[in-house]
Length: 627
Image (cartoon, helix red, strand yellow):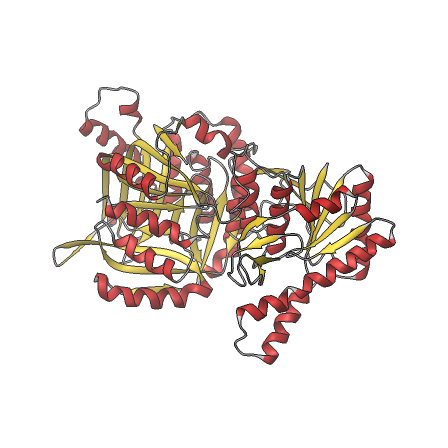
């Protein structure tokens, strides 16, 4: 069996630890396995090298930084090879360039184009352990420049080698026992997850879980690499990350293949929006408690903040009346839906003293592009929005995740939207998968709808006031951010439009990394003059709390527990977005850790009970066009 083992900087942080790793590697070989080891730089070596660069230059070039930083791994691979040889195990150390890791030329954040495994296979055939420098490669072309892969680069190197060599297993060794339901340093009650799907792991990683880099999970998902995350200090089994059965895929363009693999369409959707002039704790929890009680099938949901501090909640539900052939007319069906939704308002004792508006829109649809690493590729969302704008399709709601970007549109233009997206992203529209095929893996094998919770304290929220409500506005906003290579996570369009000079307008809010907030604000201020929007607000005092799990949003009782846990701790939810695999809330930064504790202690144990008693839910009409 061919096994790829990756050891992080902590695992090889001293001579004693390097010797311990060598003993583990030799034992793996003695168990009749062939082994490739990928190693990070020792301990804080990379930080020390960064300090040295700052001591000699205030603005070092990206090329020279790659030359400098790549030396850290060369020390650790040489020492580990020596330690293995001392134990009588044949071993050889090789840099990323020497094993044929070919990348693009983006210094500091290179992506892998291909791996040429001829040399590494030669040594493996001789029974030699190959010790590879992680985090680095060599650009293609005539110059053969040394490149580095960026944060988490050794994870990426290991999984990419596993894909290229068709390894039976890739083991990621770290200083923790595996993947936990949340950060155990923040929540001591966090539980080890024995098994998780790639989809769920990709969301957790992108939301800030630092055990695995999202790009590594993305490669594992695309090529079906079996992954295990284990502790370097013991023999516990750790966490298995289950990859789907991969479609045939070329190993050329390994990390640079197209990001979008399919287009999905869901019809029979109804959009319900509720606006209130003053927010109160517990309204979102009450709303989803009612939705769970009436067994409505929720697809997407958002909550946004209005200019006058009011908030609106909008969601899409499956129109089961039409789908099941009931004879209810549109007006009667709309009345029934409105009654179900508005019943949640009576939980709020102030409801009678404030303005509340409701809107129900029939004949809606959701159209989505599917793939991996969506958030990490800023141009993908911008291309989707511009494609829909060019087709004359107005976007009413947006949902984003690492696996899918979804837009709510009018069903009358869904054929036009699908045709435009298939053409833009080179998707074969003739390949149609049924709903069961689409959901088969995404729901995964997790015993409950929720596999983990994450808090991100390094996010900023940017709000653009009074953006004209017409096709093309979202494309211009997010196209400008893509030009600056700024990744966007949550995207929320307010549902209550204002009229300025007779033109309907709404607010658009989104979250970015705090490090990108200033650049994003500057870029949009320049754009604002050309699109005629209002002021641009930046809030860096936020935290994003997220639950992750396959099929979670389709179980509104779970969502209600999430919101109720926050309400019980008097935590105000500022914004909400959802996707198939996650639901995220923005709260005040000072309440982020408190929110994570509340969610983990209040919701996750309850989820398991709910999953055992929940009833089956209706399935929307769904079509998928796969590339």
